[in-house]
Length: 488
Image (cartoon, rainbow, N blue to C red; front, side):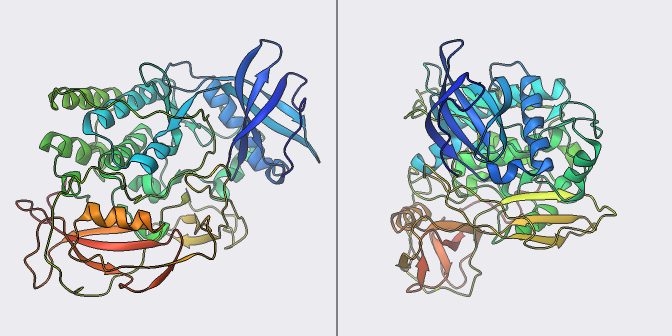
């Protein structure tokens, strides 16, 4: 896409700098000439602007966010259409937020200190409580959609209501209203309504998301902030979804042993497969999070690291299972031993779409391709392949199935990670430009290994891998925690 040249948008918003680029839109730092202030402008990509369904979704985001007035939700000031190379391009004007997303913080620093993670999640929950009381469910809560503002309080703000939906919404009505045909198509073609790593079991079954689905996503978010990885991930988005349907998560303290039983209980309740077993609402979960945070060590926690200004929208998204930067929380060393068996190479989670079965023919594989942003890059470099698969209840699951690594063509020889502590293995993978995929916790066959020691790896040591490839590890279970302890 050719960079838009000022004055491109309504003779009012002077586009100054491209801040981020994603599969759906590009985000600019801009100057509001009428009010003489800096704003962020999100512009729909030209290749998507011709699609009425994408335009409906983009308009839904404007109406959904503009209808919510809360200090923890990014404000939308204006929307409209501006001249593009071939057609008028829809745009949103939002508050400009110097800071970084939680996704960027995780990519740069690894897991956050517990009190810091709990404080951030409590603020997200308070924003969600406001949205839920207004009849809105977000449906895509994840680190990339949470901004930490560069201010004295390190304010946390929730953003990107592009796939939000009113509770009890009907086509052609409510914040997402548009043409009835376009609205129906949003469901009929399996429009993206979540990301696999943060998708609730009920969404995976093709059921309607409600406020408790957002709470499940917050549980995934908290798990990732505390451990560096989302819960119950797998080698493909489809397998991640199937794990969510069949398995209960392990306590996060398996990966971060400094976590208290109260933190474990908090995360596991949010991740209950049965929505009725979760917290009743966002306010109740926020209160529980703050209560647990208050019981954590009273010593001063590090402040959230801040950096250069970024803004809301489709910014680069970090891969789950990100390595490095952790504080050696597993803190163990172990004996060297050979892998006991093969494992399957895993890949990062992808945006996932679920829709109930409809009378229209399902979308064919490859019929819709969407770019997926890479972490830590100013512009997204991604090639994705859409896949359609039937889930257990007969719905259709549309999946983006991969992203091209930023350093295409670069290969790295995988070292022997067995016998190393989990934190050391993570750092070594990061140094090579690789990342941790699925992480299994269990017993090391035939070996008395120290807790959280790498037992096996896949691929095997000596394998040449492309830059950004995923590596699966299994680690020994911490002492005193029995298998299945994560069952709610």
